Image (cartoon, rainbow, N blue to C red; front, side, top):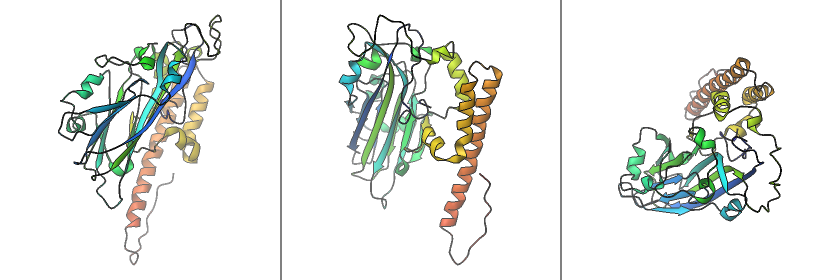
Length: 325
């Protein structure tokens, strides 16, 4: 759930590769900026609380010039330990402009094992990001969001970088999330919100309340799955795509608020009760994932038909049949 919706669901203790108890932290940053006069912008999230987000308003075809921002609670996060790893993270953006104006479009994607220098290079213009094959397109009035799914086992290894920053030329162990916008009205304000959930390894003279003389005692995912690979293989059937073409979309809130999604909730609960259940556990989560994808398709059909009805001429009513949810 934290991978799918890091805003609603905070970090969890992974427990891998450490015999000491760990601490959990959440870095966050909210920010805003005005698009270029040509209606373009780009912004990205770095998997670290240092230079956590950056935005560029140099123009669609111009070499970018990024302004970087640290997590708002940088000092507090850095005070709790010496190394950390990203449990989950995400960034969402929304645009503020008159509804009578052209809404513009947003291209969203994730970039695996990249560097900050790459995004700052003259090649990575707004137009270039928009043209990348992994960039997904959405209408600007809906906003967009992306989440950080792990790349490989290195994503779950402790490093100082998530807490104290990557060198501009260093490749990251978790993906970047980027957005490129074009066609927005002049004066459009972009609002962004980034969140980074981190598991921290304390060290040195510790003042956080963690007893470094004791072995880890808190329950962790390592108690249930022998390796990160086993863990990921058990949950990937119910993970959504890294990009959601709606800034307000969230799996956790959908499960909680919409009774139609209770099947997924039941599937997750049942899977948790069967940790180590082999093929039965996998069948449970796969069936849950398939069920929710089917529900999503049916819901989309209903929404589209309701939108059609909204523009029908009142004097010519038509009967429509909706699929059962």
